[in-house]
Image (tube, rainbow, N blue to C red; front, side, top):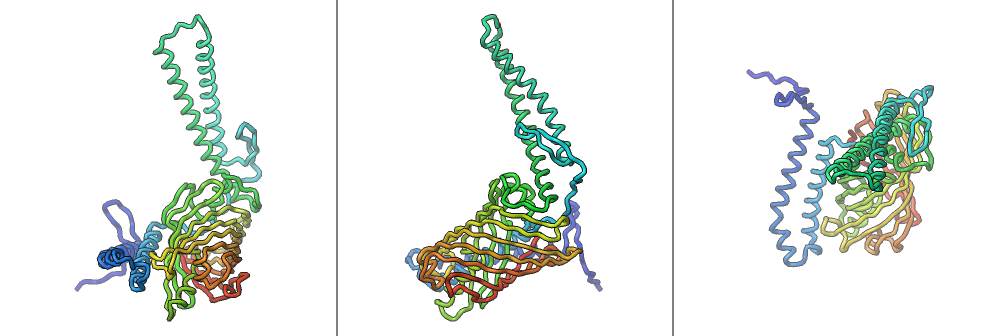
Length: 423
């Protein structure tokens, strides 16, 4: 009789990689979601094609519901891919700074001498600087010799010799540029460590500090672009939605991200469904396609990162498309600009973190966008207050407990619960 033993970890002997039960379950869910999406798509292709030929896809409720189901399966697949890829969400660095304030040093940066702390990155920076100066000296000397010979009548060099010297100049220039690039990387790492050490930054974010800020907050690890970076779901008042951040990038001063969202509701009438879905999109990510632009305004934290306070300026453009399963008769879009404030406090053992988030923005929408929300004005103010908790630094639960606006129909509609897995 076979004995079934509890399995905690499985070893793949082909590459020596250990796969946990959690990873195995994620892989199984990912495979299943992809299979379901493909089966649904191929099963409905003839119907979609017939509807397109008869020009009634935008007006067919059955097609709209089928398309919504298909997009939900796609979003769930992307959601599982994001979890499977272990991409980070909004997760603030919890490691204390290793900077020793009693040890300072000096570096040459942008033709100026700067006083910095004596860290490993700074020491490596200075070693590279010595090598760069030697190569730069050879380069300057060779360029000067070439220039002097070009003006001298007594210079008797063959074309081949001149080309060899010019090739040497080009090689030295590449070496100098390579060292400068490595120095930039080291100084960026120092800047990130410095921001983790210093407790207060308010309205003093240049390109390098802004990039370091986003790395510390989102865990981007210096990457210029990330894909499938952030996924989550929201539930409230018989309405649910799934959101996936498809791609995000650090543009120096700002962080840009593009995401997609599909919502669904169990409301009895189409008019109620339209308003409730539009409100949930507004309260969460803005639309079933959203483009975000973020710039840091403030970053305050305790020395051990147990307490954090962050403020960002956020610009957003959104769009809702009927063909993407949205309960709307026509394309709806909006643009907004506002301020976001986030704060958290962690327990000493980091097992639990409590956070709040306050967001307020000015919205400008199309006629259809306002009509879906039941508004008579195309521009309005809207904000929300969110409370939540993070367990074991990985499982995040949030609740939008209040909303405020200059439009009475948008105030305190209902509580919206959300969830996310952080890595």
